[in-house]
Image (cartoon, rainbow, N blue to C red; front, side, top):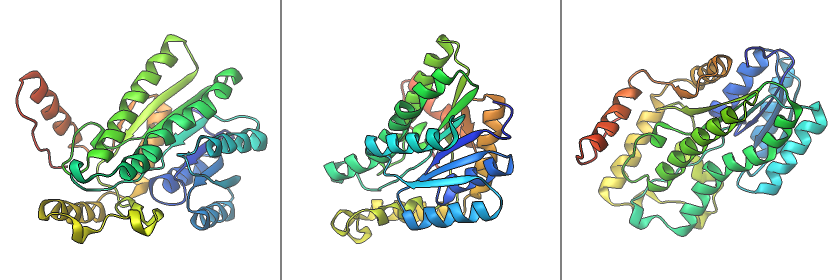
Length: 280
């Protein structure tokens, strides 16, 4: 999809971080926007700010883990603009703890947002995009944790690995049908976002308490906070996404050193050796 002017983009997790930056990049290229986020106040503020800059934008509070709410988002987008060309399933959350301490509630929450948020969007939007016959693209935000495996991040790793393979399968499904719609998966390393604070959207009883973690997991959580704070700006990731859409490039890696970790993991498999702990 090389032309963006006048086309329609739907972006989830769009109130801040990478999603907000993608919305700004898309608007700068003349796209019309439908934004979604679970944080209604931040979503309203983001939508208003984009409108103030001249964007044709609408927003809908959406819990992407709930199929009916993603259906409502699709209905709004098609009712408002009649067509959709770009879908970015970007909403994401994380929780850090050893796998043996990860609760059923943790698994349900992380998989619900990170994986089902993607599959719900594909199911809600793709049939109408395909039937429209126009050129389009779908992007899902995974992570380098979808290509590697970080310690004490089992639910997050699993959800992001699942997103990568869902999108790989989608690419094949679209290509075999000679569809005019492309697919990409975003696998960023550290980006300055608030994902390490994503448990703010959970009830008090569900939130992971750092003081309850063992020393290894607690140290990891601290390292993650530092790495995120020192990460690239969301705008850089957003530019990478839009450039990949224009080039119909599937894998979107935001950091130049990311491929060395992927190579190490593949060599572990091919050489039948124990997994290498890759430091992003």
